[in-house]
Length: 140
Image (cartoon, rainbow, N blue to C red; front, side):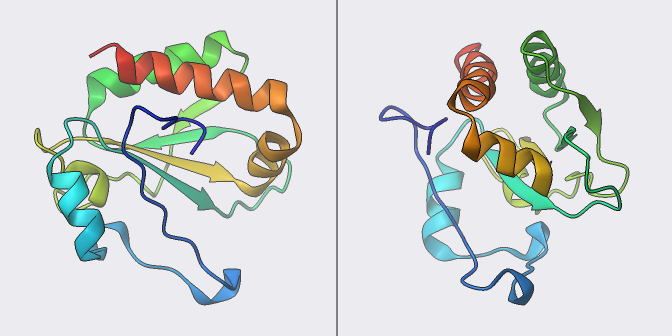
């Protein structure tokens, strides 16, 4: 919601219990979400991921929008974030929700729990993350 602000579309799909929900991104087909995504030039999907190392604070990337991913990584690095391509969750399937916008390519972020907790507890850190995302979105 912080990234979307009042001028960008936003859709959220959240679990009630964290141990009960996992839907593969290429199988996500909720009609309201699909309707919104199909009208969008840029789709940014943000997921939580589990990591073997509970100290991991890396922003992991996937998706087919390589040019924007490169820019987003650069913006996050400027703000002090560690970034990497996710070794497994690549977001490269054409039916992945992030790649179902008008141009057929999008950005998928995987955020480890430790980073998510830090983002929710630190307004300054969240502001840096949002700034990097907004600069990427607004780059057009």
